[in-house]
Length: 338
Image (cartoon, rainbow, N blue to C red; front, side, top):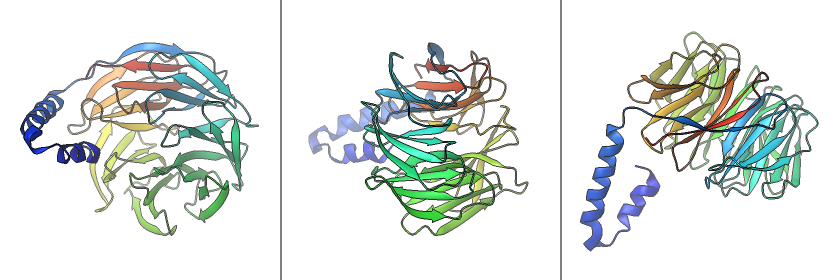
């Protein structure tokens, strides 16, 4: 149960508390008994002219943003797949896109060495963040949407002030390109990953490195993110493996495998709207869904004609978006009732 849900329980008046608790027990039981997903393809969204690099649902669940090597961001309706607008302005391909917490703004990370902040409803560029000395590969807002973290091929992580459009901190984070950056739920921490084989946890306020997670083998880390409750991190490595870490104890808890990932930085996700799943793209053109607890593959989604680089899970409903490389160029939207 999320903190939000549990706070809702606490605020229920005493006379309704019993029925509320019973209803929650039933829904918790239903969630536990979900052992399979049944995702089916709902929409195929065409329009990008090169590889799709990133797909992200807006936190309010209304919109889907996709970014591409074609230098554009496109906005679509999350539920109907309806094309809304194309956002242009970058001089080179875009590797990542992220939404602000209130779903009003978008940030994009580009090979032109800049990030741009856009107003989602108009596509207007509000700020260009300059400072990285090589391709900007990854980006995310914090939960207050006053900060952006970015990672680059220049091996640094930068923290930016959204309002001023200025760089607040440069973290000498890694000794190879930075593949992912992500804030935890209360935005006190940032996690970064790199081809140098390390995941690092940073204090977002001071820029201090609090912890370094390193694997025995030390394969390049292609992606990392915090779990929704902020207690774990999910890390993808270029040895066909996803690992769930308890970073407080620097302990690997779960290993998910069966997909192919040796070359590209493929996004992975926690799916928590129905059952509890791990979702990832794969270099065999499929999307893999694992049971978070048992590590079993519960479904493989077929349909893309090239490497599935990016996936995203809808914040409210059982919807997955995916995007694929050059031979495919489409965004696909999938839906399940579990």
